[in-house]
Image (cartoon, rainbow, N blue to C red; front, side, top):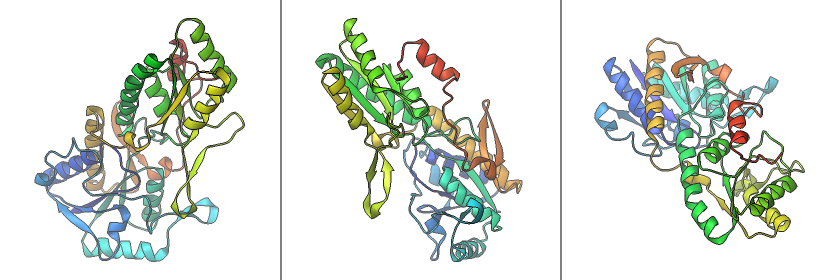
Length: 356
């Protein structure tokens, strides 16, 4: 049996651990692995791929990024069709089917986030044997309690806060750190708690800048002359606006709220305020041990699903156990922070202001 694997969407710490797990588990079962380069694009003629043997994955678990490459801009970009179902051009599906048939591939493992898994679902519905592996630093897929890459992203936030804290104290400044996460506040909340932030602003909790300013002034009155603020890129301003930036091709992406918050806080408090956007630092670098282990476990489970011909399913992590759900259950269902949940309660209990 020969299986294929590809990485799609943004890069993420732990992708190579998944590849390592897939190749290792497949080899034990006497299966061959074909790795497609640059995401779904590698499936299009002339197919761009490489055969992966166990010796090819020695030492890759510690590497950030992916040895196969990835892209989030391709011919497979899905669009909304009838009944709001995501569709891909039929010609692209046909070419994909031909590539897999020519290479005698019996299963295709797709490692990606919500958008990539939406594409995987479309391919499965078109008769292509697909297995999904959830990948996103945002940790916002409903069908799994955790995704690999999240822990590494949080560690990056914690390291940044540790470093910025010393300069904030030295200059008696307010530091605003903008982090990734799209419409979910997991990275901001977890990173803020672990990194000792004083204020955390997330999309799930409506915040008021006057209350944020009051918190800073109260700290000042108690002799705490510096304040650390973490804000999620997808948090809305009090007027409901999302801050976005234009990219080439007139597309937009989230980003820039940190600068806006810093300017307004400076005006409201009179304190020197600086903003720092971590951006793609959160995606790069070595994965943490947790992400390496989780990635490898996901890869092994994906191979087991392929070997058992349980196609159309996605690997899922719940209650410390790796199982699976249908891909259909996983896509388009964002898992957000529960404003009344235990993690938010923890933040409030240790004195973190959430701006409300």
